[in-house]
Length: 283
Image (tube, rainbow, N blue to C red):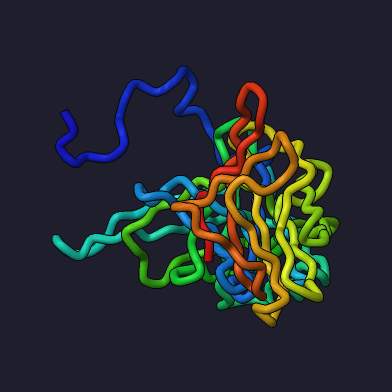
């Protein structure tokens, strides 16, 4: 019987309570103003699992953050009066040394809003996505040099909190070495050797968007981003376009056009003979 409760508190797998916020699970930061319009990952109806990919503005990327082993701490505090409860998220860690580059980062970004991504994408576990563009974590750095150590104490804190803890992100993060691939509308390729967010090149006349190559695995999320300013030359993606083994399944069969900053995301489903791209969200 379903009486409205979402989620479960079943017995966890062995070792679930072991330390997880460790140095071998890297931490990345993305400034909130780096996200493209409609580029922040959307969550499903339960508000935790994401169904779309990170899309950043041209030239932007996730920033890797190095911290001393054993110093990273992520906490969630429930605050507020009854009927006004909210979660306050906070990440604290130590960055060793006093390099000029680190000092410049702290000075020029204090008070700036970030979304943090913690952990590796391992199997189906995803990464923790901490904060969001409407309620980011703000950088509050400090510094100490004495006989015991030299380094920065770095704190990322929310200012108001919200009804959400972290979300779980299943996509890839665009790093500095990544370049978002771009393909002609009629020859879109989702290749796991490239970034999983693909731009549809501008068209010269109305054309059909077709996915002609795909080697991402079952349950991966891939995303298309439009560039066309003119609807008359934008590409159009319809149900079941593609080659003989790649099938596109759009929500309610509604076509998508590759207009500038419009996005559409899919979950990969591997069938016996065909691979399906099942729409998860669009904007």
